[in-house]
Amino acid sequence: MHNKPQKYLNHTEDEIWDFLRKFKQMVRMKKFIISQNRNRKENREFLQKYHLSQKKQMQMLLEMQVSDFCYSVDDNNNQGEKLYIFTKKYELDNWGILEKVSVYIKIAIKKEDYTVIISFHKPNRLMKKLFI
Image (cartoon, rainbow, N blue to C red; front, side, top):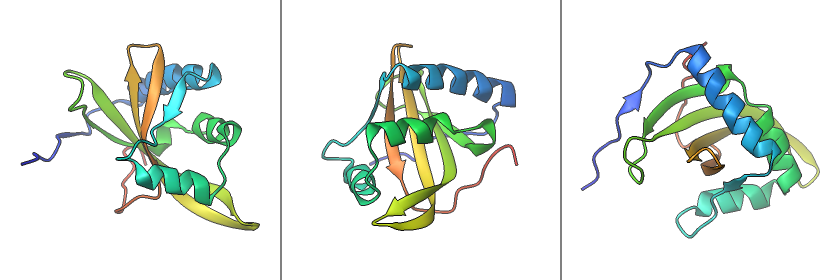
């Protein structure tokens, strides 16, 4: 039986700015991965559908802003760590047709030396941004 994870909305814009600064530094150094293991079929399919190369993934991740932040949740795999949830609209190429696509992005920073994007796909539900 899975408990619904605790959703945290008590972040300040400065906290999220600091998080994004660290996150973007890792992205620039290519110390990130978008999870595509067997549990992350949605990510794999999204990356394939829009032909998102590592360069395009980096560009998208570096465009994220504090205003794209939604909330954080506890990381069930790492006690005391949080996962940060963002949503951002991007213009993406779907076989020559440009589409405005909302992307659900769930991020875990691992020991300050790399980051894992656990989710990177269209949202499965309506997302509310915290600082709008």
